[in-house]
Image (cartoon, rainbow, N blue to C red; front, side, top):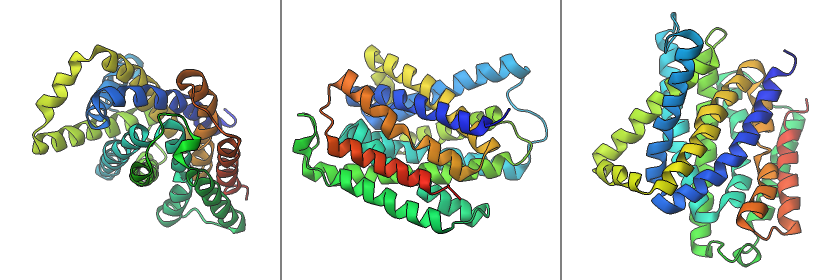
Length: 300
């Protein structure tokens, strides 16, 4: 199918736009840390059902030990640690600002793919890096008083920005390692399942050593948060992450990451509709500049 990877990447961006709204609302009710420990197992269940229906088994034959290692590390870094940073940022500084900062992820992805997969950077990618970072700083320099009345205070804003950047690094590393793990033969669906199982084990092991798994389980009583987490899990770590691996399977990692970075543009009308945020012209122009710079990275 022509442009299968590009279409999958755009589908991922649409799904992640809705995911950010679900998880922002759920995280504000039960905390992003506890949310992360529910959303990953939810997605693993949906992936397992899909695999059993489509192939009658959870894992195909012939997966190498190297592929398992890449996918397991990818799941822990990208889905456990990276997404924990991302969802903490959602709660701290809000959906739109987090996703604007998160748009730096394709730049990091391109650099890591260059090192591990041999994807090179030319003049246009370098210009794209400069334009993207300029757009991101343009938006983040905006004072919280120009956002919604519930916007973050300045002392929390810096923490939120660092968390969002941590999420960007986590996704970049996870995406490149996932592509390396799939290679030429492994299908994206079982690859996503392996990543999700690794992430589930990782996040609950962290909870075990922190001694807060019981506290997490008590959050089930918040039915509203659970329904939001379930909805976000379907859009995000189930369908969205699956489609993201389809994207990197059938197109260059950098191209897929650039298309998936359109989330900040797609989320602006959603936060206006659902959160009644006051989105300034400056924020809109900053989003366009940031995502435009990311796109420019791959016009080679």
